[in-house]
Length: 525
Image (cartoon, rainbow, N blue to C red; front, side):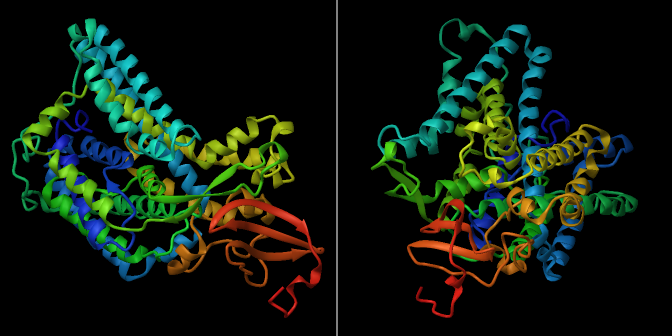
């Protein structure tokens, strides 16, 4: 974004945008677990607007300011009219495609950083930057693998998992000064003066310094920005409050979209990128706050007898961590820390982009379905939910549609028409709602396209879409404390345990035979 907007947005603008989002949402938001900052899609939006507007001679910052102000009004209209109730139709289908798209945007940005090294620093610097970026990726990935393993004490694993990536960046920033690498002139992160914009301007944008025609020309751009933020931020909120997290505090989508409008307008007035919910940082934040307990493994075999399973007991739902990272980010805008940031080689930054992209792909539903299809069917465990889809062809078709949706979104974002990619992203929702049920059975969709968040989270927007689909239907829910099973339906004397959970943590999906009188009036049974 720095190079593609002619230095309009630099490090200080991105940092201040992250600080604004973190402070506002950590203190005032109904969903403070969501990390807010500058995302990959908004960078595409910003430099596409730059490519369209600057040839006309329009002041870029004033135009972006009016986009933010118009979008503020649109966000508030969405909040007042309870437009977030439409989130009930958002399922894993559209969320996974968008997450897949964001992951590839990160990978693309990393590649672009490396390819620029040839023209800016020469071949030697370019090749060393490639090596450094791959080393950063492998080291940070290894830290994540170690954090999820059973090696060492759990405190060591937790430390490596949480701080492995920043420590990797610090290490390789110094690593390039060892031996002969010291003689290679590497491109580093460009910075400016402390608490000053990158360009020679004031922080407050003179939004009146623009032609009246351009004020109204900003409206269609604001509509596209609002569509992007409506989907992107809410999807970040949904994934950060996914079914795998046993949350106890209710959601508040309408209020948060109101706050997002406020930060969008303020960002326009300050001339900084518009912040919104981050993928994959938002779900990573929630995952880092999970507290797990060691319990007897309910799926243990004779070979693994006595082994314990780590099961998430609860999530530490608080506002401090989000606020703290925002205030620490503000500290990096000071002179001494900006000098430190300036020492970071661009190869290390490319590696960081690769880390975020790979981690986003690793946890994405599209990737998991691809791995399932590539795996030897004879070695696929019976507990894999996708194995319950009778037509394996249905999984192929579903993944194919997800790849087509991703490819169309990614392709359009590579052209001057990238400004319209939010419309394509939003169009995925009606495709899932009205088109897919024509080609897939309800039982198949219940497995292939589960709800993004739990019914508890979705209660504020009208519940979960597809409650009437097979596997999610039935007369209510039977809950047993401690070991808890949600019963959704009975068919041919078979009890469908759709969600079997131990202490709120989903373990597997089971179909077992049971007498039909289980649902008798005697609830003590």
